[in-house]
Amino acid sequence: MMDSYWQRQHRIIHPDLARATIIIAGLGTLGSWTAHALAHTGAQLVLFDNDGVAEENVGPQSYGPLDINLPKVDALHVQLRGFSIEGRHVRFPYPNVEQDLVVLPNAVVSCVDTFAGRRAIADWCAERNILLIDTRMGGQVAVVWPVYGGLSYERYITALPRDGDVPPMPCGEEGVAFLGMWVASRVTAILNRWFRLGSKGLPKPIMFHVGEGLDITGREEVIQPFEIDPCFNSTEEAEAATRWFNLGCQYIEGRRTASRRCSPTS
Image 1: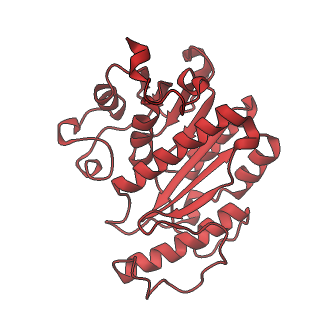
Image 2: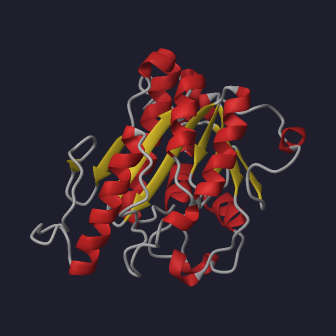
């Protein structure tokens, strides 16, 4: 019976992905939708988040009004009942987490909302040579960065700013569901390609304006706000997007300058 669940996609989803164990750290806008996408591949998921569902999570995240006040791991377990999911109401990683895991994961998807958290996850993955996919967002812009191998981890960790360097995104522009769904699709496709081709199949980091469908990876750094760009709804959004764009350029190119940074969140 279970084989029939996957019969319409078995020539697309690599069988090793369907058998894989994937950790998702952080179950906000990015992590909650990524859990949905990966569950439908057949992968075994281990979910980590120490937070509960709040009213403001209902719009951008996968949760509904009836999930409010539930731990996010429990709400997702209900949403995805019948799939292979474990939930831990704790941040990842924590000391001796390996003792609580049945097996080491094939990959970790980082969807946390602090740079300190990203650094801790990256250190854990680097020590074990485990594939890491970092995800982040700001407004309608997303960054997805696959990391694997010593030099790749070194470059990634060096590029991470400190949390105190970056102001928050303006209220009302901190997350939207369609961006979370786009990131979830991108992460799932990257993992499928990874299991088919190995490390040579990993794409470069991408920075993407999801609302406009624009790949803005590697463009020249923007200094002035996007004041005349019709894809922005307000001057505040344009200014925030400019700061975030500049951070993304620095982030992807591996530069560490302290100016014009805006905080990507999960």
